[in-house]
Image (tube, rainbow, N blue to C red; front, side, top):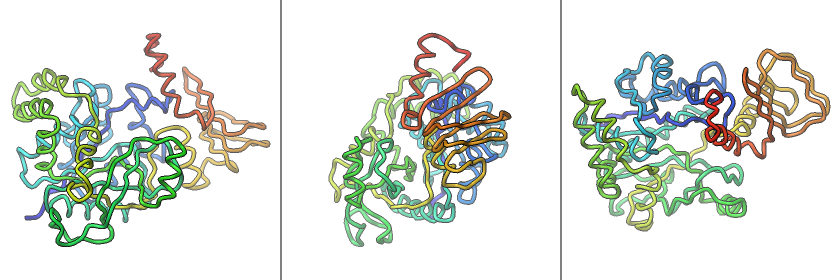
Length: 380
């Protein structure tokens, strides 16, 4: 029977590393960091060729839901869910799985973060369709592994094993060299280990994109997170009832705060390469996880000359660069002069100014923690 593919988009974070542009009520998912469309709109547009609008489900938070509904008028508003409390990716994707399994026994779910950039969309569509084929053929979990271009400490890594072989136990899909068994998932490494992974040639960046059937995910959660699974099943049972929102708000905070990687993928990988049902599709998609100002700088530099001055990327008005290189500046409507400065990040908004370096851009989230501690709510 042909699988029915659904896109589940996770859009709940605050985007603290993009402060001061990203705020609690205007997080990076709702910002046009790369072109005219927002990150949220780009994600949906990328998936629409694979999935009808009524098959999208978006999990976000109460601060962002109204903005997402406004930006995505084609997606049914009832399918844009606001978590009553942040509980990481396992309960979020798990809730979608329990909801869809009740509605469609043939549902296959793709999990997609809302803040990725993918240049080669034709290749992306091909890889996702292959992943759906594998996920629908059995209790298989499929991830897209990104071929690393550098030793990066900001990503988790997937160690690829042998190519899937026809006739092996548990493989009921047409195998091929494009599908590898997963040996293990590795959390963000230090630079030395990241370099070793790149040199090894069989490690891939963990893209955070996964495909599995609703039945497979529900079964995995019942096995590895039984207490959370009970709550999610009760919430899903209340879907469509008058008291759904009340049930959602009461039960969801009881779910464990844990990522899908820790909850399901790592225990699966510990079974051993031949015994697990984890598969990786190596991919080169022009992929970028826009997780910091430095990542945005690198992406914009590779994408083309718009807004650029030599090696500087400037989102502003007229500009002049004198002996400056490697800088990112966001100052819309202002004349920007860069003189003898290197590798800086400068971001100006109406009420805040960020000055850091590309090297330290991952630490911008610490500013938001400071603002939270000082209860400077207007700045977050």
